[in-house]
Length: 135
Length: 199
Ligand SMILES: Nc1nc2c(ncn2[C@@H]2O[C@H](COP(=O)(O)OP(=O)(O)O)[C@@H](O)[C@H]2O)c(=O)[nH]1
Ligand SMILES: [Mg+2]
Image 1 (spheres, rainbow over the protein chains, first blue to last red):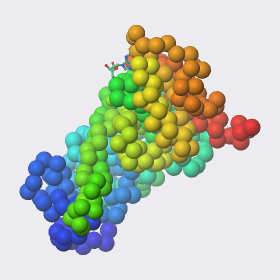
Image 2 (image 1 turned 90 degrees about the vertical axis):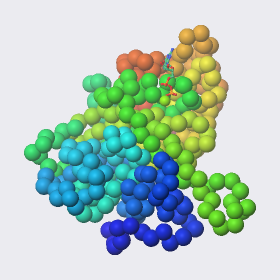
Image 3 (image 1 turned 135 degrees about the vertical axis):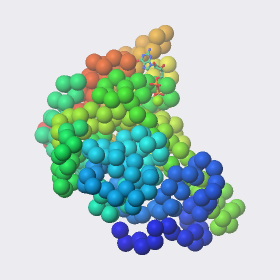
Image 4 (image 1 turned 45 degrees about the vertical axis):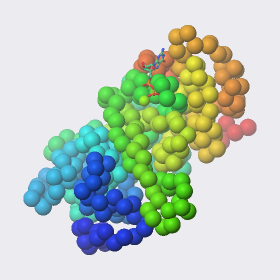
């Protein structure tokens, strides 16, 4: 995480959606306010099925914002980004930004999905067959 | 999943890895029903905010020309083993969500295209999309009461899919039927990956 400022200034960059600097607007905008307008590069490396877990038991709760605290509580056990978003009822885009911050701080570990499309691993596919049969 | 409270992984290698299968098809084809019948959890719903270029960019002369769309996704989960978790995503079938499909399709193991016998044409765009990207898919024909009873060959012809694409009858409400559809898909993926099958 190289970005120093916690909250990027609304610098009028035309490529940025206007609502990033429009913290006071309607309900759709609220989730972005939670992220302070951050769209860190790291957030895009988190997939909707990346699995995350809190990496430590002791947390200085005063040092994390409420939404991040909710994430830390929900990922005491391994959980996917999509499940986190569903339980918190906030869009995945937002969860990814908050998570990437927590990963950067070392509070959360993230595991990328299995690269299923490129990597033919018959043992994995066989395990999937067995798992489905057991349902 | 596998972990217990006292057992915090020290590196991400200690975490399970996830895979996904998509369930695509027209509105009301039974996607959410299928996900729910095989999932070990009650299907969850989440939203993704997508930014897309809107029309008339030129007219706006540099003024912010992006609009946002919120796309709802349903998904379920099947724990395969302590190292592997499978997620099933029901994907919005409308053509206007193709930008979403691209993100969803990335890294997917395969796709179940649900054909609705009342409106076979509602899955044409899904078939098209996955065929073009070379993503393995099976067609599950979800029968609704009173709808036409198509034979496999009639469905194959209507959808214009190759003879290697499995077409299976399904009842999305039945777990056994959903399992059968998923097994057919994974077997199809295995067949496509083993060199002997190309011939
Ligand atoms: N007869 C019949 N009805 C079904 C079947 N699958 C789903 N339905 C019903 O069709 C409706 C729409 O299903 P849903 O899963 O919400 O469709 P989605 O829009 O593709 O997610 C629901 O009322 C289901 O109960 C099926 O296999 N047979
Ligand atoms: Mg649905």
